[in-house]
Length: 294
Image (cartoon, rainbow, N blue to C red):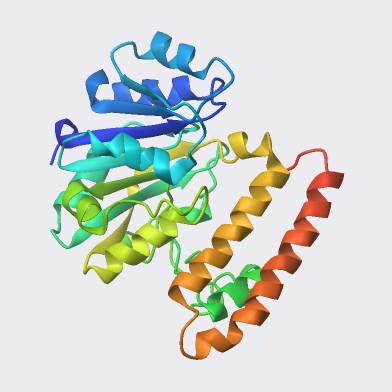
């Protein structure tokens, strides 16, 4: 598999300040403009003008209203061919060699349905969301209680963000991040893409869950490096996005864990999610630099 086999979907909303860098990184990686599909979720700013100036030959689909991230990606992917889909946030940039490394990792094993790169914050720190375990009740409790941060090398307590494993180790994971994820097209079609019920957040976890359930593997490839200006768009409307984030947490639990003994835990989980939402809402209202997640 080569970059010529890849099609890119970038979903924008109020992204005029960052989408140009994402598009330039795609072109620098060897992608032709026609391989890039930008889906704009009814941005009221100059996002579409920036797209046209930066990559005039790129595909641009302007939606009449904000359909959310999952629906917009599905719309963009529907008309694309290619052997693989690269999902890329408008505030993420492919660093040199990233796309080739992602393609090589996906091509190395037909069981791999998706490959997550090493996603880095602007200061070079690992964005922990790029290699995660599924948030089972126990794993979520370890994370929300702070035990995962207190014992970052413990194989069970730190399982959610896999901080028990070296950052430069390639390995099978439960889930990557929708900020940048290369998905085999056949696998994407088999699971029917993102669940459109997720407006924003959680759709990447759910996609990887369904890929795993379909027999595919999700792989973390640290040789592929991506820089992510995390949270720029969501900070513009941090409190509403907090509600979206926690609503997605609850949906994921109800879909995948609220059965058997997990059903009995549902009231406690729901109260925990509501409590976290309340605390973070107050925290964001009071702070100068609001954000949805750290």
